[in-house]
Length: 337
Image 1 (cartoon, one colour):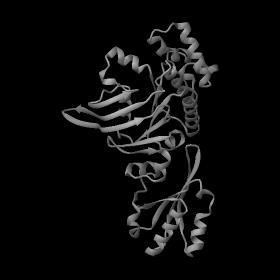
Image 2: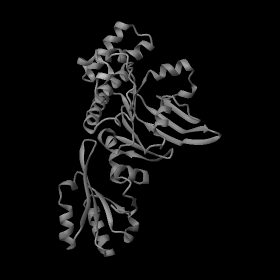
Image 3: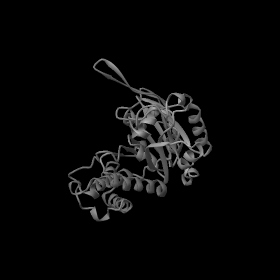
Image 4: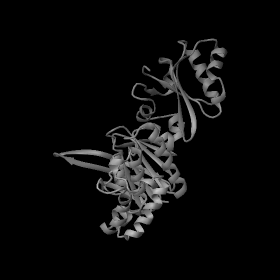
């Protein structure tokens, strides 16, 4: 297992005489054995950040430390050795078309000088882990998207890495296959103790597999915490948009008197209580459900609703206070659903 620490990291690119700031003053700590999500919309800078972790992109400023070792202080030879401890999988699989499955997995072992016989033994061990033993002689063109990604995962594990970086690893897959790949990654994390960093623009991926998450927006870290806490009570506009989509925006509850739509999130205790029915009975007023959904958050079914409240300001406050007293997270919705 490995710990990752990112300190004051910035990355700038010079493009046609203009300076483009891809990342600005990022500070993150990813604990050993964690499954950590880094999420943001397209262009937010998350892929640049993940490439900075293994120094495929060298930061303009700041540090990346792996188990306390500052990558900027390593020679090229030392950096190559350190990179062998960091596996990486991509959205487009990046398999070698002219090699069969077994030889694709052997490829990184060949690069570091492992003998062919030994490399094949290791490759077959990994094929068992990813449930593709029967496909060792197949070529990438003969595989489904999910099978290609399993081969890519096996290849990334070939050198016994301590860290696995997943850059949009499920974006090219259908939902069912995505679920299977995420389950595989979770099993790898639990069985092998590998620290996994998941880069994605899909909140469903984060809620399915990650323990903690960082939200990146326009190159900046705007929010960080446990997946449960951020899903329950997102603070940044970027987190709110990623959770519920562009059509819904939230503001603090202090301004509730100007709007009458709220989002509520059910926790373990409140999930079994007929909260909405109780509100209607207690306050003798209709409450409209504008939207309802259930998400898988770290293996737990978590419900969310968007409600339209009555016009009376004092009644709105009483309803919100009641919902909060029942253990629900409440946030105001300020745009049309």
